[in-house]
Length: 332
Image 1 (tube, rainbow, N blue to C red):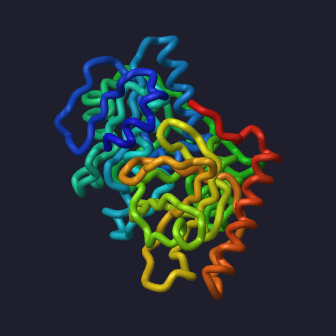
Image 2 (cartoon, rainbow, N blue to C red):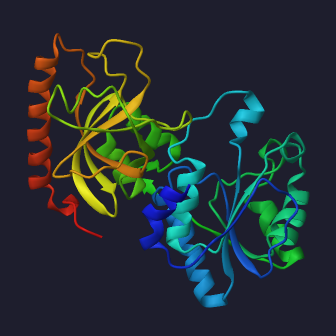
């Protein structure tokens, strides 16, 4: 946690109050609230968050996000849900935006069966101190998702909060959603995913020791991170990347997958050669942003053949940054 704190320290506007895994809380000031999973913080989410900031400026309410600490799909169906943005990444994304409160409420069976009107009265109004609520037109909450905009509008008049319904952000005719972004990631189309996100898709992790083949045997020392099990990864393969390490951005070429050329049962990992970097970052947190797909994961006949292919990958990365100067790394 401390390492990830350092990554984001330079971006913060103010400390955010983070409340997680408890139902025993009440915020201390009137708020403008939005609710949802906020997986990926895509352009649709950003539209809601920007509206909250406008309400804060005009009415003086603190901004607050209500979400769940456990993905509802996990409890409802028993399936393990993968996420574009982990809870830790979501927390720091919201903090760097200057959100005042982030509440990750425990999703228990009692909460799943909660009447929508009770949810609004007891949680949004009583605990979250909502004086304004910002949602999309298809929002749903409470038992079987029975709560909707019409219920919020009715209860807003009775309980004294304003309702702002924000139209969906679209990509051509399709709604921008986490599902849409996952589809593009599964194809390896990170450029499109980034367009929908409004920012580069990123993977955070502590640098760990790998099998020590990249540096001694291939001449390309790499930084290895093991992503969380619930992190939604793109199609296995090689990507142009931009790496935030020790406070600066660097160009990178990143392989995601199981390293099929290397013998053994290799775990799924994220391995990055960082251009023009010689620091010791073992045990430190880095952020790997994926910018463009290079090629799919391949098994090579020898390490020498792999080395030749990596040289071509490096050339691909150099050309990409020459053609896309907007993404050229700069010191921060």
